[in-house]
Image 1: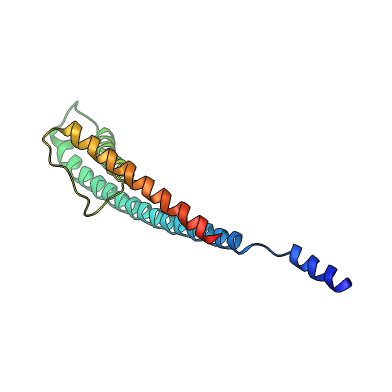
Image 2 (image 1 turned 120 degrees about the horizontal axis):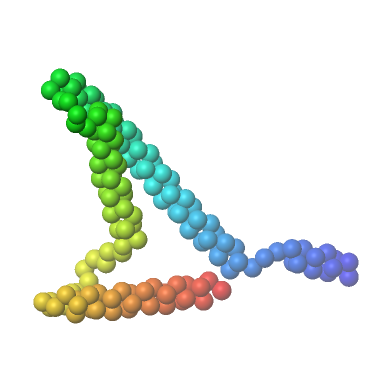
Length: 151
C-alpha cells in the first residue's frame, strides 16, 4: 500500500505533455519577440548614430557658411538660429522617416494572392479586407486544430 501512495504522490507532481508543449510554444514565441525587439533596438541605435553624424556635418557646414556670411550681414538671423533651424529640419526629416517605418511595421504581405482587377479604389480596398478576414480565419482554424491535436 505504501508503494501505491508513493507512486500516487509522484504522479501528483507531474504535468501533462500538452501543458509542457503549450509552455514551450509560448517560450518560443517570447524568444522570437525578444529577437525582433533586439533588432529594433540595434536599428534605432544605428539611426541615432546616423543622426548624430548628420547633425555634426550640418553644424560644421553652418559654422563655415556663417563665418563667410558674418562679414556681409548686418541685422539678419544669428548663427545660433540658423543652426537651430538646420538641426530642427534634420530631426523632422528623421522622425518622419521613423514614423513611416513604424506605420509599416505591422503590415502583412500575402504573396501570390489573386487580386481582382477593378478601377474603383473602394472596391479594391473592400476585396483586400475580405481576403484579410478569410486568411485570418484560416489561420485561427489552423491554430485551433493544432491545439486540439496536441491534446
